[in-house]
Length: 169
Image 1 (cartoon, rainbow, N blue to C red):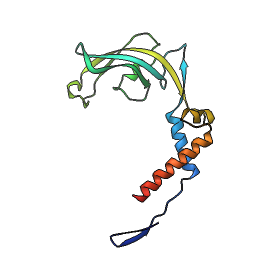
Image 2: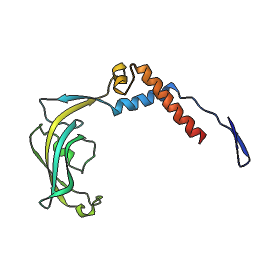
Image 3: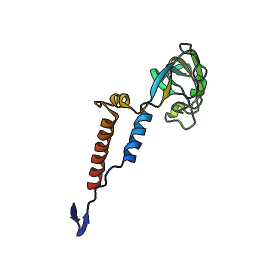
Image 4: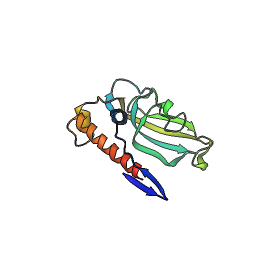
């Protein structure tokens, strides 16, 4: 496809999506959609995915927005206040745990910066996350696909359309 812009002439070349690019996208989907296996008979460990409830308190008062129910968290991910997740390692399901932390000095809510807080926590479930197997069952879990090959073809088509649109812009 040829085009002209401000007196410049060029030819648009559309590059096909490679098998390697489709494989990379499948790997991303595999990592984003792990197999979750409930764990019983042990306490939470670093790397476990847990489901917990928590309520935070600062200066003896509940923290606005400092509570959650059914929150999913991977221990060691660093998603919460420094020191929070480490105190949940070793906790058993359905046994209350008090987590004590200090908000960082440069916290997004300045009124909490540098202040100590406690969180009353209860872990309801511990899960082990492992990569899903790339097979027909995985493809079915991703939508209206019966086989992994159908998923691969749909990904290739979607990726090609996106690349072609970017190239035309």
